[in-house]
Length: 238
Image (cartoon, rainbow, N blue to C red; front, side, top):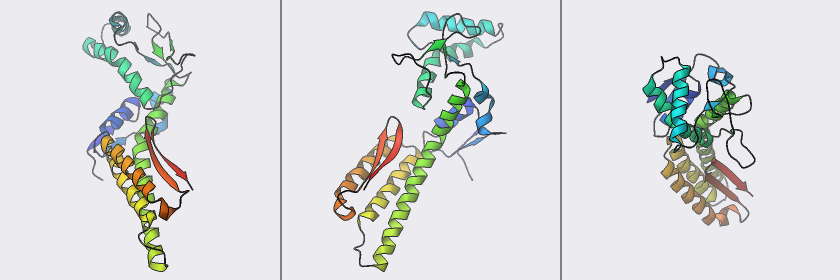
């Protein structure tokens, strides 16, 4: 197997690197020396420090100071500064990837004190932050291939079944089942390649096409592909 990108390490950093690398048409492999679900990252329970308001320069500078001070002066100040300034973006991205941080009654991410910090800036998921983040990233990393592969397989199966029916019975061929199968295969390609705009266009084209084929499939039949902020899904009614 030939890959465009190989990521070594199955912790949070490695998983995020693999997900980001997969945003294009790259073939990505992630290599880990042990169980993907039991990395050092998954064992960490405390949380992630971040100033959630990127405009609060005073608190960000304090975060930089606390971090450098905790490193007893041997940390790389440039790297620490970059990390602290980007921390809110990383939290937002983790939320986008499905990490369910603890929140207050108004939906705001809760933050608590942690070692070395001079204020409450630790975002957390109960006492299993590392495990929760790891599981969300593993799910995100696998989602494109799983959904794309399922749609591709379903499309091939539907098209083949309709062909067999057409050859062995008096059923008119091609029927709406073939159109549905071809549509599923068409949608699976951009999903597997990670091309977001093409995914949306293919989903819309497929859903419109399946509506036009209701006479063949039956008025009660619906097989819609849903594309929203939570990801992709299949909605079937019959």
